[in-house]
Every structure is written in structure tokens, then in C-alpha cells.
Length: 592
Image (cartoon, rainbow, N blue to C red; front, side, top):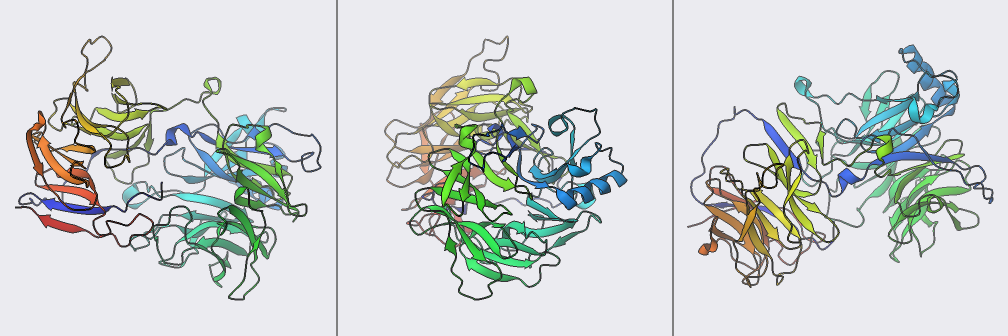
């Protein structure tokens, strides 16, 4: 997200009398949404041996993919030694058929979206024949939590950043409503692997991020805004480093201000990242045992290289970090004595981004996650849709490739913007992702909407999102979008411009439920305000101005009863940005 993005406020405009609806109405249907680039990530977790690398030799080894190439998997941790052995024995007692000698193998704890929302998984080696590759072919991901809500409906909360010590897994989750506006639901929890009991460690009303458990398992380090809420920070969240007891969250205290992504090296040394005053993301360290109120963190990595998400080795001699020297993010080792970086993944996949390094407890293995790419040979593919876990019975939730997905009135089709490097085609496909076809390809486009009356028309903005006020952008009606270019059908789509040339930035068309009008925003008189025009012949036949003022009104939507228009605006702070404006407010305006 760009720091210059405006602060959006929800506004309602009364066009007449709003009709009431009963509270017992049935809920059902499909919700489509898009996440920028998400369906092309294909993250998997990888590990590599550090033998020969740290000694300064040329003993480079290939990385090993340790997750199964399904969905998105990330933020891993290796469990080994006494913890791995204890877990393996417990799984055997629960009836899992594990490979012989599994107590000597490491287990992988990680996050995956294979079942929809991000959940915690533990991969275990299964029983197999001698010589079989247990890592890539005979592992079973075991879900560690049952995400089930009231009446058996699944809960679509997020679980992330797991770490394990003994029988306890520490992680962050969004399962409880914090009860405050502009306050994250993130809180730290512990899960007892033996009893399956989950305990919240974060105090009520407080948001915690990125927990890490100390080597002894006694303490947890996390970063928190301590109930201050989100102040519209973009590049760096306003978070401080806290430590507390892993058993019950007690003895909570702040260690140092301005910190992110902590990692323990020993029982007192915690590494973290922050944006330094000189503009470089760098790694710092603090003493978690220091109870003074004004501890100054020590800078570890020098300026000149952006360094993030440290993973400390137990040796105390080095840390693993993600770095960004160019546009590509790589994993490197930083020698704490020599004060030098040692590139790791740049030698293996120089053109691929790598994220969130982790180090095995014995410090002989390094892990991270990266995009696995599209590999037809191992069965992965580029999905157009991905169905998610829905918290509402009868409601499907589906992530769509591209941007601005909208569902046709009969519920059978998605229309969306299929973006490429130089163009953004308007495409149509079925809800399952099949029968994709391009119905309009005249350059960049965004802000799509179907005609709700079933005429098969899709309204779209011709232009680039976030363009300047004076940029020429026009609203187009694409006809026959529901039937155009079907196999065996020679029907092609046609289009008509609804806004005139020279009227500057016109965007985000939204048709009225009766199909007679389209509301949109335009900068034709110097500011982005709302207008209504005829849905068929455009502003040539009818044009009415709805709002007027030196602010930005945008993204309108018509209520189903034809009486209201909701839209976003920065009119509370028209000169502010998303980073500096304060307080979202809801207003109601009655039009004559």
C-alpha cells in the first residue's frame, strides 16, 4: 500500500426513504474478492544444510522443499532434539504410523492455507520403505487446531508465527474480537500439545504481533502497540518489544520501543528489526533481562543494506536475515564478529524473492519460504479461483485472480480485470474458474460492475487506478459480456463510452438496481465528486451532480432498495493522507 493513499471514510447519501428489512432474512450466496497477486505466490517452505557454508568453503548444497506444494505454506520452524522425540512418541501413541527412527528426525511446524484460512500444521515423517524420500513424499500435515465456531460453522480466523518448546506451541491468532475500532485482533496464545488446551497470553484490549519463545521455553517476546490501535502507519508500524511468561502471560513488561519480528539468541539477547533514523531497515538487539525503563537498543547491521526478520542462531556467532539490495529479497547470514554478510539464496535462486528465515535449534540448518513457481511436472498449477473457509453457513467465499471481481446477477459468472505487464483485460469466467474468456482488451481498466437487470452488460473504467485528477479516464459499458466469445458462439461483445472526452478522471461506475442510472466519481470540475448519468446513453442523455466540495468522494455503491448510495471520502481531512489523518467517521446526507 502506498503511503500517499488517502484516508477513506464511509458516507451515506439519502435519495429518498429507506425501507426496513426483517432481521430473520436468510443469508446465502457467494462473496468474491481479490488479493493482489495472492494466487500466484505458491509459497512453500525450504531448508538447506549449512555444513561447509559457514566454514568459508564452497560446500553449497541444493535447497530441499519440505512442504507438499499445495496452496500457500510459510513461516516455518524446525522441531528437533528432545522436543521432536517427545512429539513423535506422542503421535505414535495417538495411532499415527510413523517411520522407524522418526525420533531422530526433525519435524516441521508451519502455517498453511491449504484448508482456506491460515492454520498451524505439523509435518511428520510417515512409515515407508527403506531409502524412500520421507521428506518430500511421505510427510503428513497434521492440523493443530480445530477452527470451529458456533453451530459447527468454521471460523475463518488467522493463526501465524508458530514456535515450539517442549509440549507448548506459541503462536498469534485473530480468533477473538478485540472490541475496539482500528485495533488489530492479533493476540498471542499457547497451545498445549499434550492436552490440546489453548490459552490466551495477551491481555484484553491489547494487540500483539510476531511472538517468539526463548530457548528455555520460559519467556515469550512479542511486539505490541499495547492498545494504542492503528494510527495509519504504512511503512513501519508503531510497535514496541515486550516480554512475558510463556506459562500464563504474567510479568509482562516493555523492553525497548520501536521494534518488529523478535528472535531470541539466548535467555537475555533478543534481535529485532526496525527502520533506522538514516532510512535503512536494520537489525538491532536488546537485553530482555534489563528492567530499566530507558534501554537503548544496539544496532547490529550497518546502513547500506536493508535487513529484516532476523533469525538468531544458538551459537551466538551469526544471525540469518532477509535482505533487499535490489528489488529481490534474499536470505543472508550476518557474521556478528566479522560484521559481514554471507549471501545464501542469491547463489541458489538469484531472481526469486525469499522470506522469513528460521534456524534449526542445533544451528546446522537454515529455512525460509519462497514462491515455488509453476511446475507442471509436480502437479502445481496457476489457479484462477480459490475457495476459502466461510464463517457463515450457506455463504461461499472465493478468492479470484486479477482484481475488481464482480458476480453476475444470476450468480453464474465472475467479471474481473486480468492484469498483465502492459494491459488489463476485462475477462469473464464461471465461478469455478472455467471457461475464461476476454471480452474487452483496449488497455488498462479497473472498477467493474455488472448491470443488475440481467442485460449482460459490465461497466468498467478505462484507465489506470490512482491516476491524477487531470488524467483522461472514461467509463465504458461492455455489452454481451455474459455470452461473448463462448465456444461455438460467434457473438462478440460491443462497447459504448458513457462519459464524454475531455471530462478528466471518471471512474468506479455503479449501476442502480433498476438499471436506469449509473453513479460514478469524476474530477471534471477540479475535485473528485459523485455524479449520476443514464445507464444506457450516458451523460449525453442525463447527468446530475450529487456531491460538491474540495475533497475526494469515490467508490460509490447503490443500495438494493434504490434509495441510498454509500461511498468513501476523505472529506473529514481533505488535505491529509492515510498516514496523517485521524478518526474514521460515518455521516448521513439528505439530498433534496
